Image: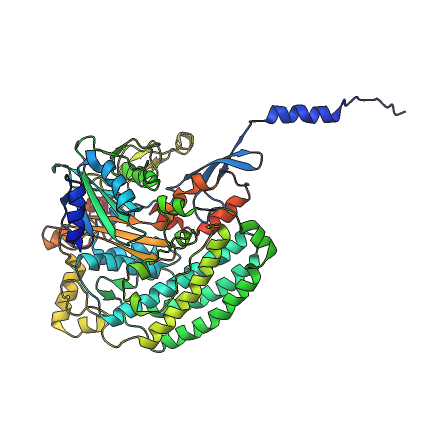
Amino acid sequence: MSDANFASLKERFAYLTERDSADHLAVNCPAEHLLECCTALRDDFGYDLLVDVTAIDWAAETSPRFTGIYHILSTTHHAYIRIASDCVDDAAPSLPSLAGIFPAANWHERETYDMMGIRYEGHPDLKRILMWEDYPYHPLRKEFPLAGIEVPFPAADVAETANAKVLPAPMMGGPFVSSADGTMREIEPQAKDESWTEKEENR
Amino acid sequence: MATTKEISIGDLGARTGVAEEELKGETMALNVGPSHPTTHGVLRLLTELDGDIITKCEPVIGYLHRGDEKIAENMTYNQFVPYTDRLDYLAPLANNVAFAMAVEKLAALEVPERCQAIRVLCCELARISSHLLGVGVFGMDAGAWTVFMYTFTEREKLYTLFEELTGARFTTSYTRIGGVARDIPEGWLGRVTDFINGVLPVLDQIDKLLTRNRIFVDRTQGIGVISREDAIAYGLTGPNLRASGVDLDLRKDKPYLGYERYDFDVPVGTTGDCYDRYLLRAEEVRQSVRIIRQVIDTIPDGSFYAEDAKRIVSPPKEKVLTSMEELIQNFMITTEGPQIPAGEAYFEAENPKGALGFYVVSKGGGVPYRLKIRGPSFCSLSILDKLVPGHYMTDITVILGSLDFVMGECDR
């Protein structure tokens, strides 16, 4: 069924390629055709409920580094489609905004921008949504450390009187592991930030 | 001696006219939240008022952002289960199930029928719990305090059941990848039956208190109307979508956990106003009761976890302590995590608040490479800037109550 569906899509959109998927129909779509493709999917193929927009960071040394992911559900024939679109520029990634055709994309794209730093061209109001406005990083990028990075406190007046800063979280005692691969010693659940532990002990 | 002095106040009528002229076009900015009883958590609304009518409303979220997705990338799949409790913290069992299902989908792992039945029970009890709170608090928001007392009494009984099943009232963490933490306790199903027998009369009471209550009806009918088109365009799911007349329930339309085996109806609204959303939730509780009865009647014997998936499932404790093979298996799963093949999968479950989705990307091993959580409340709130303007200030309470959102899931 998935094949037949992809064939019919391929007939209409020559630029689509099939994406490996164990669950839903999944396609790769070049960023420049994304808007056109999604509009047609909504109007002619019944994919009308945009459920999720997100992105994957394939780590700094990979190119293309960022892939935008869209999941659309049809309210009529109840099937999902996953659309993946690679961002062309690794240093300043961007994708066309779908907010014009799916209002639901507005917040999702703001979140992806906030977390990953992908700019959505044509978005009506692309600003941070979960972090505060002046926050300098995009925390879901792979190089961003789990503990966080020290940044100025969001409210300047409070920061001045209370001498407050946003500090990295202490990792001691947490169940965190650092990566999916490595020796068992390295991936065993443990407090990774051991320097912090030693510092406390030496004090 | 007192002296009197005459003060001229001029023509009162003319003065009012001038003042009105001066005030025309003048708006007031009003900040609601983030700590405000009607925002049900830490939601902040930046509103602009013209008199008592809202002209602009901008929701500000993120006050409960904990970086769950970042955390997920740094721990094994089973370790993340407790974090899912804290998404929609009013229905933690349903979140546990949705997360486990997403990872199992990626691993192409089918859990045994008994496990599926237990999970259906979990989901539906969680739905009852969440909807009871949703309806109770909605009633309270509209001024009907009594309903809240009834629903919370019932929720308390549910928490006792959850505690018996999972060991915790609130943060259940009941599922594991490939199963559930433990089998249902002896006699528990009987106590669930007692509970659902007791909850039906309470639903009738709520119905009597609210459904034809003049004040409640006046405050909710025709308020916060979401059209069918808007509901789809803004990605609303669950009761909020169905209240707008869209017949989409993932339990029926994309059946999982064997929901196709159970007989239940999906209520659908007609107008999409706050009143419809209330009616829909109340009816869904009744349907959940129907499903639970069928599950209890047909629950199969067998295992509560996938015994054959030795690289994914951690064996139950009593086996770990008595058998060498299971001890090694347990050690491997605990240290390395469940071994999930490389690939990606997206799974959405019909949770009480809407479709809770998990998008899991794996490069193999026990830790997800990327985990995206799609919280239904996030989408429900994104419609506020369109929905609220044109209403009175007091309607905000009712609209927020009727959307039944939870910030843990919105901010993640």
